[in-house]
Image 1 (cartoon, rainbow, N blue to C red):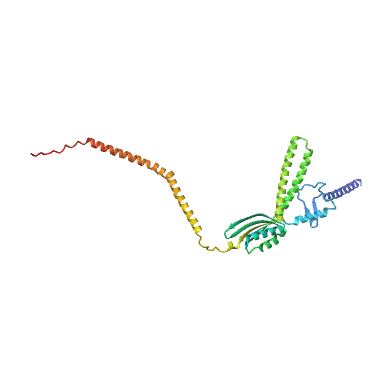
Image 2 (cartoon, rainbow, N blue to C red):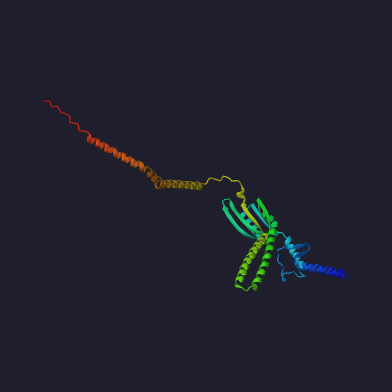
Length: 320
């Protein structure tokens, strides 16, 4: 009987202990910031995300508004928009001024501007930065400045995923930096302090790189880029044969004469410096051989003249 009572008591104590552990586990899981509850549901944090400190934990009064802001930030898309236009205009300079004013009125600005003067007119190139929310309106106004839209290209790049990844990396890096600072404040040995300081410096550099990339993506998505080429209407027309211009013909003739003289002078220089010396070097053996043969012939003729006897003088008959 006593054995049964002891067994029953042990079972009851084990059951009470199990219930107590379950209650404590539930309370701890509710207290830790392992998930963020928003209006759209539960958004779990990454497994390697560090725990938030007391200063970073959301308070009861602002948690709902903070969660809504975080959800809105996540649902917002970051689109980098670019456009390229080739416009045929009646007056290039006036249209450049109008487009510049249009960009300023829209809250944008001109990044670069260049112009080239031709006989038929002025050709200009503009690069604009326009707020993304006014991109479509700006494009419509720019098209109205043209006699003809010769070419139009619009492109967009979604960088939301990259920005979200960078945001997560930034949170982890900043948490690691805080931990390193805490460790450094408690470190006494010089070697350990230097080691922690080097790690802290490296982590700070990574944080700055991530912040710079995030800022670039944010600015690129906030301001669209529009590249415009303005061509005068006369340049767009087919090429026509103009009247005869004597000064142009004379100029072409002088240029041809100068080119011919330059060619002749170049040929003479090559003959004197390269061709003639090379020919002399190649012909020198033959010249030497000819001189030797000529001397031999002279010697043979001289020997023949010395060995041949002189002929007697002819007899003269005298008649009385």
